[in-house]
Length: 315
Image 1 (cartoon, rainbow, N blue to C red):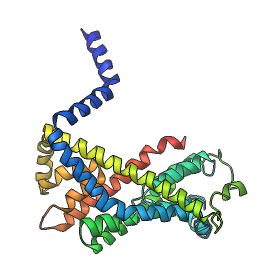
Image 2 (image 1 turned 90 degrees about the vertical axis):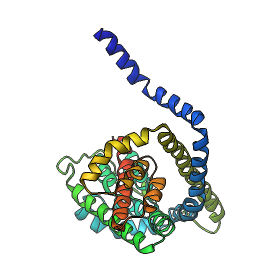
Image 3 (image 1 turned 30 degrees about the horizontal axis):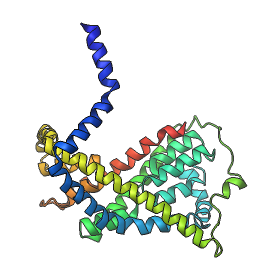
Image 4 (image 1 turned 135 degrees about the horizontal axis):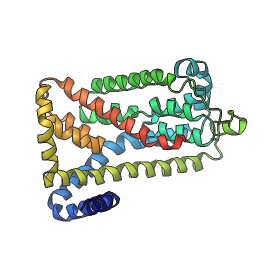
């Protein structure tokens, strides 16, 4: 009997994703009446909020990477990176781009540094702890202005977000401090070419085209995630699973004297950050600070989720 149970348990574990995808497909069919409005709402959010805020900035960031300004700033901050973050000066490029572009750009650059031998495994892990951040245009534009209708809230969220990243970076400067490996090469001239000025009047059109193409690919990927997770959230709501989770978590929120209306948007935010924050911003409570705190929590949650997902590339 126990052997049969073990076999069934192994099969269930092995085919868990298969059953999950079957449930998703059946959910799309069974709850199509509620899925279609949810997908439409996700597309409207993507078109009216995400694209206007992020797409021009993605293009500008791609163009910026083809100039020498990031390389210059990296060398300028070399004297500060080692004593503060225990990172070589080249990490300044990753830190700056992570602040400017938003996640997952910081994590991607850190992993590229590791793959190209520009930093050690330990340095890459330290970089991932603080360089993968939410972009200022998303926090200020999408969250602050479009969702909260208040630029001051956007500035407050951005300030605390950046300050938290710097604090984590300082704390993680001691990560494996006595176990620094030497399995990386120095930042040679060939590696510096990656950050050097490559744009000129002769190739400006080509670089602009590549920047727009790359930005379209990125923005469509974000839109795809928004639509897919909007469907998943709709299925969870229609099937009653989300209400079961809310009922289970409600006593904890009641004990902490927190409005239970935040539970659903928080669970939604764990699946898709834009929809989650949008729902939180629409909750009318006496203390707007609760909305801001939970919004900041989701921004940090997705920042660490992207970093942890990138850890495998450190080895």
